Length: 102
Ligand code: SF4
Image (cartoon, rainbow, N blue to C red; front, side, top):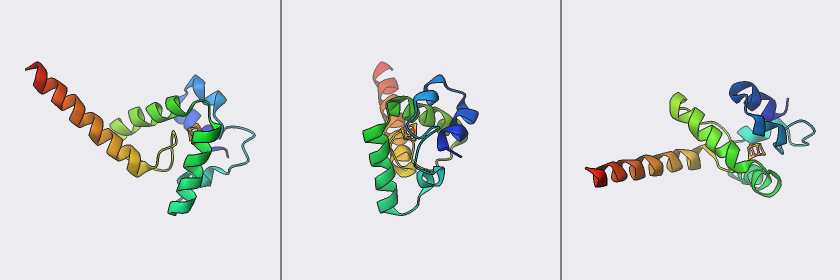
């Protein structure tokens, strides 16, 4: 099953129809949940070079993961680890902004 079938079911987002990993993709959905660094890098390159909805995918993942607190696989051209770091950076930036306002 293409990975975007899973993501569309979860998110129901309109942008998913344009996803490079959607129907007709030659990349199996398991590839987006690779564990090896070389495999993860290959999938990230696929997202970055082939997908017109990379930004939407990344932000959808960030929203979903913020509430679920779990991160799996490559989304929006970023590994789960990179998204965890991005979430931490965004939280710190939001906290700093709040402190400036006080
Ligand atoms: S950015 Fe990657 S995971 Fe996200 S929709 Fe595009 S190809 Fe799929």
